[in-house]
Image (cartoon, rainbow, N blue to C red; front, side):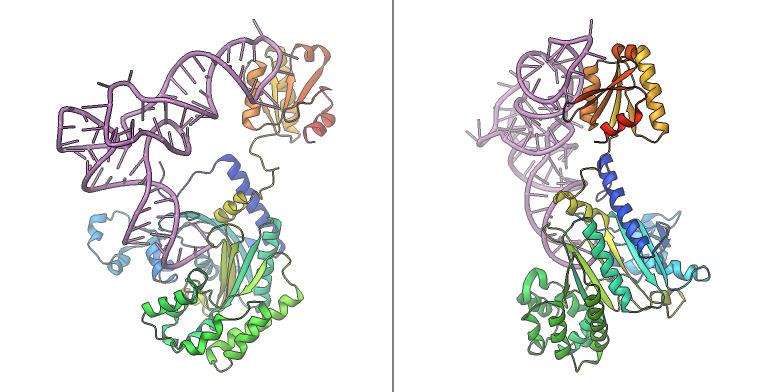
Amino acid sequence: MLPKGTRDILPLEKKRRVYLQNTLAEIFECFGYQPIETPALELFKTLSGKYGEEGERLMFKLLPRGAKFEQLSGLSATEMGQHIEEALRYDLTVPFARFVVDHRSELTLPFKRYQMQQVWRADRPQKGRFREFTQCDADVAGPGGMVQEAELIQLYDWAFERFALPVEIRVNHRSLLQGLAALAGCPDRFVDFAVGLDKLDKVGWDGVRADWAQRQLFIDWERISWMSLGDTAWSAALERYKQHLSEEALAQRGLADLHELDALLHAVPPKHAQLRLDPSLARGLDYYTGCIFEVSALGVELGSIGGGGRYDNLTGLFGLPGVGGVGISFGLERIALALEQLHLFPDSISAAPPLLMAHLGGEAGLRAFTLTSQWRRSGRAVEFYPKEDKLRKQMEYADKSGIRWLGMIGLDEIQNNTLSIKDLKTGIQKVFGQLETEAIFDFVNA
RNA sequence: GUGGUUGUAGCUCAGCUGGUUAGAGCGCUAGUUUGUGGCACUAGAGGUCGCCGGUUCGAACCCGGUCAUCCACCCCA
């Protein structure tokens, strides 16, 4: 029995996760990111107010030490919040902002860090949605320009190319959304406007308009109806937005940023990922202020497998104004789910060692054990069958454990100073001298 | 937080309109084979039918409640 939305990880799955994390770490470091960790627990006041209303609701909050739930249960949410002192981290970005502020004297800005740790959300579990999951984040804190966005897109592109996972990266800009809201006549209802628009992929334009209506948003549809037609090819789409938003002050920063990004991406275009300018992309996390990204896997029904964006003043909330940042996140579980469904994990990832030493006991057992220990000392992964048993049992064990090669020592081998090795996959069996280590492991690694 | 789905063996499920000892496949254990796995055959182990209560002579089946699950919405990795 486990709490809902949590799960155990079995050996093969664990190896696959390690493969994903190692690959990501390698790429992160290639781009100059340095690894850190932060505690699972943060002060509630550190996290509170950073994720919007929904995020606040989904945050795991801890009762103060010694407090009885009954004492607090009668209180309203805000009253209760005043008693909460600690919470489980909800993402890695806000703790990173806190980290930068706390360690500002030890860091040189711009500071690039990566971090792969669990986060917790009190969501209702669903397909691909857990209450405990792992995020792999890369963020830059400090000064910089659109090259950073370009770099992050490139990072996404490389990573998913390595995994051979077809993806689409959607890009938008908060200022573009604000400009659109203003153009539509509701600059003061920006959040409702964006949240409704975000559903476009699912419900289409009629659905979006219905959603807006339900939120009592008065939309000047005539002024934004041009959005519903036309292509989404990056440069052409951008041109269209420049044209229609030329009069909107709020949109100018977004248009300029995206223009710059467009130029950068022309120089270093993504090789693998599909890139789309998607003005309907909103993203709920409150702290984003500039470019925003979201990645979805193509060919699988899953939520987004990554997301991120630029936040101008996250550290300001912790007493260090003027330091912005930009970053992205990879959702480890969802990427693993996608790769599994599409059979994209390399076959070479296996939980079991390649070789099992079988033996018929007595002197043969001792000889096999000695050889096993010598091989292990030289770094070869070898399993030793731990008791005297029928050969048949030992083979069955290897077969079921997914061990492909079986080394055998019995009376014959003892007499001749040899060792038989069988490839259980092909059925081919060969005899080696006991000291022919190179030849033996050439065969085993074939 | 809202709506719906499903809870029977380790796993996937069957069980007709309530009827007495609850089944199958896969898996598991042992053997056929005391130096050769996958296949086949034989035998065997394993279930408070999610839980509580109700209706009934009798409940896996009907009713109520409860817990869990999965899916959709919301939101997101």
